[in-house]
Length: 158
Image (tube, rainbow, N blue to C red):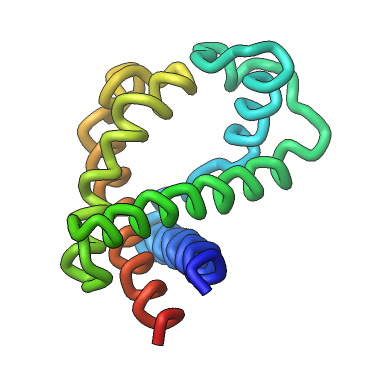
């Protein structure tokens, strides 16, 4: 049951994140995450060992990069669910929406200090036109993600 709960919570959290980003797009014209770039980054990461790739936006697109990006997005979401599950079983977190929110907010350090730099956007998005906005959007999106994950665990574990 725990493997199914982890997978389902990760999927629910990613779906909530995707819906959140679509709502932001339709209400404020803030574009959602570009999963094609994530797929391209993943491809070059695996085939050339380029974890930090400042030129990823200008590198040639790869066939299937959008599908790969969506796969990586949900795969990473399940990875976060494993981390949440482990922390909950260690007694550090519960499956409450409040702990989910905390988990999501804390998980914002991953895009700020790893993924944005890996895409050439710099630590805390310093190489983007709007670093504060970019970091704030990552924080909000991860807050939604973590909250949805906790709710997902609660629903699946009933």
